[in-house]
Amino acid sequence: PFTQTVLLTLEEKKVPYKLHLINLDYKPQWFTEVNPEGRLPVVKFDDKWVSDSDVLVEILEEKYPEPCLKTPPEFASVGSKIFESFETFLKSKDPSDGSEQTLLNELKALDDHLKAH
Image 1 (cartoon, rainbow, N blue to C red):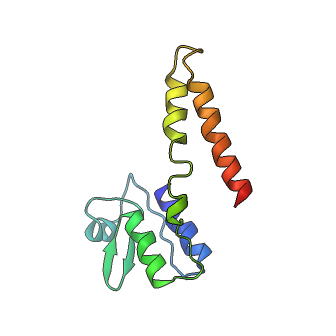
Image 2: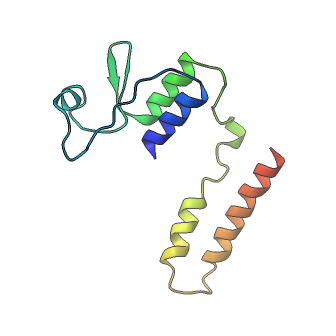
């Protein structure tokens, strides 16, 4: 998901880029030289290699502010509990523990937000 986030940001901002597909079982030497941790994605900005997707998206947002893809601060928490409630629901062995309703409530809140905005 981290690579997809960066790719979607590049595409949405119409930033030209060169894509290199990396076989993680047989990493090329150039890749391990510029990125010893072997993390993906990795992007070169101003002769510096960056491999943290959050940092990459932040750099892209600063260098290419239009269109703005930042989540407005007032919406930052929207949907933030969905994964947690989904995980709790999946692990639940008690159908009456309320985890299903909690998940449904979180999904409804997200749906309502998306409809409104």
